[in-house]
Every structure is written in C-alpha cells, then in structure tokens.
Image 1 (tube, rainbow, N blue to C red):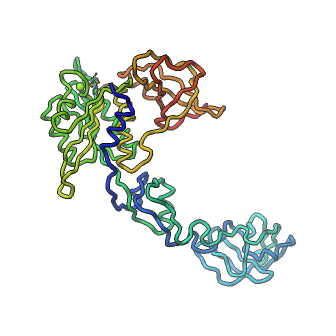
Image 2: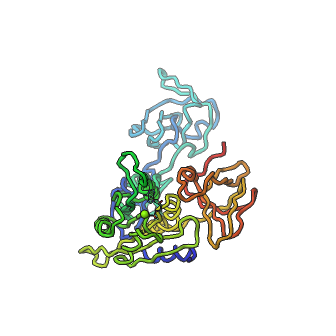
Image 3: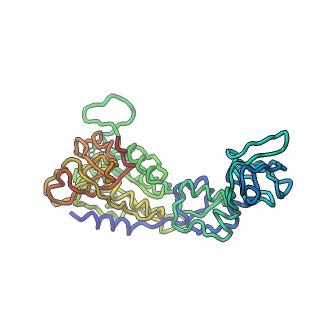
Length: 415
Ligand code: AMP
Ligand code: MG
C-alpha cells in the first residue's frame, strides 16, 4: 500500500494546467483568469447621487429647516439642465449625475416639498460630499481589478461588464467524460434480474464533476469487455480533456479497466492506504491532435463500490481537475471540528475517511456526527453527509474530541 499523499502527488504531477482560451464573460463563471484585467474606465463614470433626494450646497442647509427653490429634476440616465445656485436645490434620483454647484444630497425622507411653489423644506443638514458617489469611487482607470489566477465568481463577472470587458482569457472549463463499467449494471428501468444492479455511480460522478466546475459528458455503461472499453475510452479521449471511470480496478478476474489501462495508457495501479477507496488506477492515454501531437488525456479509474467511488473522486480526481483548470490549492484544506459522538475505528495501517454530517454551532466551532452506516456499498447512508472525517490509523476519536474534516459541500446550519 502507498500513502495517500504520494498517490495524490503522482496524479498531480502527471496533469497540467490547460492552455488559455478567450471566452465571453457569460461562459466564464467559476473559471480562472489567465490575464490581468486593467480597467480603461472609471466606475462610477460621473459623480452621482447615492439616494433619492435634493442636490444642494451643504452651506445652504447648515441651519434647518432650510427652504430652497427647486430648479430642476434629474432622473437616473438624465442630465442636469441647470446649475444649483445659492438658495437652490435640484430634485435628484439615485444614480443621477450631480448638477454643477451642488456638493451634497439631502435624502427625500428629510424633506417636505411644495411642488406648486417649487420649494422644498429640508429638515437635515449635510456635510459636503454627503450622499455623493464621486467619479472613480469604485474603479480608477489603470486599476488592476483582477489578476491571473483569480476565480471569476459571479460578482467578478459583474465587475467585468461594469468596465466594458466582455471577453476574457481564462483556463477553460474541462470536458470530463464519465462512464461506468460492469456486466451487472442496468439503467433502463426494467425489472432487475438476479445479479443485476441499477447503475448509480455514473449519475453521481457526473454531478461531482459538475460541482468541480467541469462539464460532464456521459459515455454510458461499458460492459466488462476490453475491446468495448478501449473503443469508448479512445472516443472519449479524442472528445474530452479527462476521463472518469468507475469499477474494474481491483483484484477480480473481470477488472477490465485495470487490465486495459495497463496495456494502453501508461497506467499506475495503486493500493492506497485509505478506507474506503483502496484500489485506484491512473492512466494517461495518448490522444494526439493535429495541433498537439503529444496530447494525453488523464484517466481516473475509480473503484466500483459507490462510496469508494465518491471518496476516490474527492481525494484523487477532483484535485487533478482543479489543477488542470488552474484552481489553487488543488487539495482541500482540512478543517478542525468537534466530534459530537465518537468516531471509532480499528487499527489497520490505513487512514479512514468516515462520512459525517458537519454543522455550524453556536459555540463557533464546526461539529460533526457520523452517518449511520459506513459500508462502502451503502451510498444511501452516506448520501446526506457533507464532510468526511479524516481518521489517522489508530482507535478513532472519542466523543467531544477534535477531528480533522474535509468539507465536501456547505455546512449544515444548526437548527
Ligand atoms: P468493481 O470495482 O467493478 O469490482 O465493483 C465493486 C462493486 O461496486 C460491485 O458490487 C459492483 O456491482 C458495484 N458497482 C460497480 N459499478 C457500479 C455502478 N456504476 N453503480 C453502482 N454500483 C456499482
Ligand atoms: Mg466491475
């Protein structure tokens, strides 16, 4: 058996960050920037009002109530018609340009307007600059708003639009082929014959691939037949950037993924000192393209037991996909949590990854409790876990003890 860290290192060393592409920003959510973004525009582009109210000279409302003559009305998108002189005010809406002469805005809540007399009584004094958003308050020309390596979260994409940047150079979203192997698998809704099971890993893995920010591409069920598998893998390698398979990587007589990858894909077969997900096959399949004669596509051969598949994806495939998409760090950082009940285990030379439910707690710590069943075939029991507890070799953790966890999805809020 090899240590998990060396298995992860092997995989991470074998894969490389994909070459950048230029995409419309609407297709770039969650992707990693491959260029610095320097703004050529100011945001906001002009001084404007932060509230609905009256643009005034602050000195005119030093003593309140102050009665001013209303000389103009300025809507968002409109332009001021006249300057604001002494004793005057312009009615102004949020986002509308400040008129010349005015240096502050009194909000409408602090006013009583007499529209027939074109007058307003203001009940509050304001400092110079109050409720005015100066030009360039958010972004200046020349500002580096984002840098190579930054992830384009939705707000970042919004900023790009706000500075007139509609196409960006990014590390592309990977297309990841997902397939399952096994003569026993069915997914056509027919009654199960003895020995058959309903395929589930592929559906799960496509979701995990999507959650990792990639595009999942379905290559179906492949029977335990090397020729069929080779055909599917070669097609997938020519069409996709990575391949995730489930099943066929342990010690059985029909473990075709292992056998085939050993023959065609520079495979490293590993027995990793973890539970679940001990067997793992990793291969690089030659898939030359005219533009890239040395192109190779990584194949992650995950074990077939559903919970093993889940854990194996998390520990070995996801980090590599992240590296290929330029996301750092590739590996999740473990968090410290409090074990609400004991997390027992037996000494066996392996690190155990027990599925737990992790909750936020009013004491400010994360608290975890194990799911009811920890068998690697019991996906139903593990399905609502949002974290795995990392239990080094030994006897586990007692109730109330501290444990490291990998958070797989959002924390559950304490009820
Ligand atoms: P294998 O790794 O191919 O020996 O499979 C190990 C166990 O996982 C067997 O009980 C398989 O039937 C089961 N299994 C394999 N692939 C899948 C799948 N795609 N969906 C559900 N169970 C599977
Ligand atoms: Mg199998």
